[in-house]
Length: 183
Image (tube, rainbow, N blue to C red; front, side, top):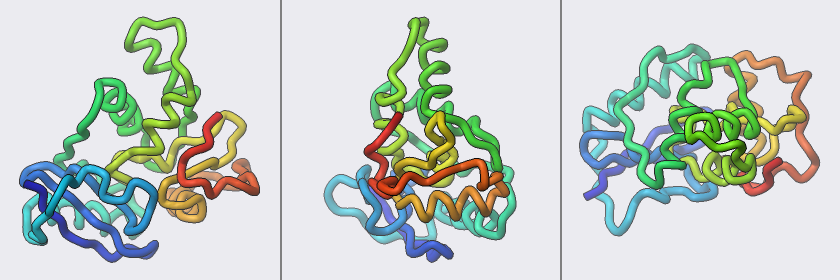
């Protein structure tokens, strides 16, 4: 059974999903892959402890501070997807990484010579727990923002909110592609 709750952010309404104990999804309503971890019916249950913790995390985040904790999360999917999520979780508040760096770390962890940055981009673009698993902190190697399932305008706002030096970053004219283009 899945449970849902809602959160009003400065960037629009968000939906939280849970298995009852862990956060399994967090999306901006209407974003690409919105509610991708919810199969079938979901019961509205806004007072679950995990939703309360997530709302506290989001409140701190949108106030412009590092929340300092991670609500209990559960990332479903392949070992590859879980590894990419784990690597994204290690990107500190106010910092960024690239698809290529994450690919190199996946290769290192799996004992491979290399890993495709495009494969990493696919996993990053389908991240079901936005903000907390900080896919918005992943950039192209050239510093461009590229896609974000929630929209590149939101990605830029989030990075600015975290104090990332934006003048060094660029937004390609066709970057608002919902996370599909990758390096």
